[in-house]
Amino acid sequence: MQAGLLDTYHRPVSSRQGVAWALSFVLFAAYVLLYFGGNPHRGFAWDPFQDLAMAVLPAKVASKWTVYGLAYTVAMVVGGAYFLRRHGNSRYQQVRTTVVVAVQVVLAFALPLLMQVFQGREYYFSYFWPLKIEYLYPSVILKQPFLILAWSFVGSLVAFPVLGYFLGKRFYCSWVCGCGGLANTAGEPFRHLSGKSARAWKVERLSIYSVLFVALLATAVVWVNWAIGRQHPEFSRFAFQVQEWYGFAIGGVWAGVFGVGLYPLMGTRVWCRFGCPMAALLGLVQKFGRFRITVKKDMCISCGNCSTYCEMGIDVRAYAMANLDVKRAACVGCGMCAHVCPRGVLKLENRPVRWKAGQAIRVYEVDL
Image (cartoon, rainbow, N blue to C red):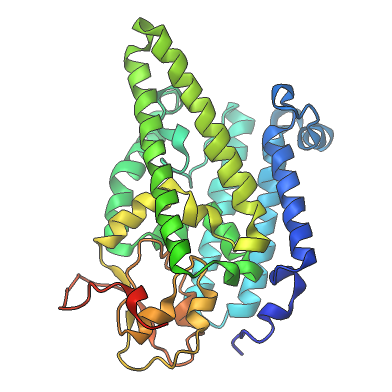
């Protein structure tokens, strides 16, 4: 049986009741201690995650990031099992969930851990620039072996734009990325909490493209410093400040503290929707690419299941009622809107663009 919406809002943890606020507070506190613990000049001398790592892990991998990686991976495995119990009657969801969990276990946890044990330096093969922005910093990537260097550059600058054009951003955001993987597994009980209003859409566009611009600017500053920093020490100091600020504000506070801490209150794709520069970049490619969610004309009964289950805050129902294919930059192709549609109105497809007269109307001009 398809898991329906009847009990979605009846659970206190997934309906913004007191237990949801308490869980959000716990997540916030945990991420603040993780990112800023052991950092006296930021006011957090206590570092419980590092203390735990030192107590239970071998010396070579005794890092709080190993503890975090293990907890993150376990959360995805358990969350994936929970998700498949609810939605495992879909072949697409079975394969997608299995792949994203396997990528986390192998490429984002086990392989980096083995590299740290044998080489003393890890590399996360499932993360690319500009999401993992330091993977295009010269001081970081040029120290890696040639094959990893090629993996990073070709993946970020060549393969991803091409795949994004033909397959949409779903190939990464819903099948590979650990951020999206956690959202789609452990975050399943909260996906319906994403805001669907036109105002939320405006804030989303302003926020995510601002972060993308900052990421591009920070990368450019770092590369210029690599080229001329020795001759311009003042610029070099500025470049290091930019790196530190970006890592703190975007990589720590935005992606970690708020990105996961707001799960129980704003849904599971807060970071992906409002902050991820990779999602922004792939979304721009997707707008001009082949991927879209097609709509069977005049078949929507306006039940609203698709919009409710959209973790990216897209009002899919409005598109279906207007007989318009969904081709939003935000869409991560999770397929849940098609999965929960009782009439099979929606379908994920990759096909060339064929513009028709009137298709450019704004969906929010439709009477909602």
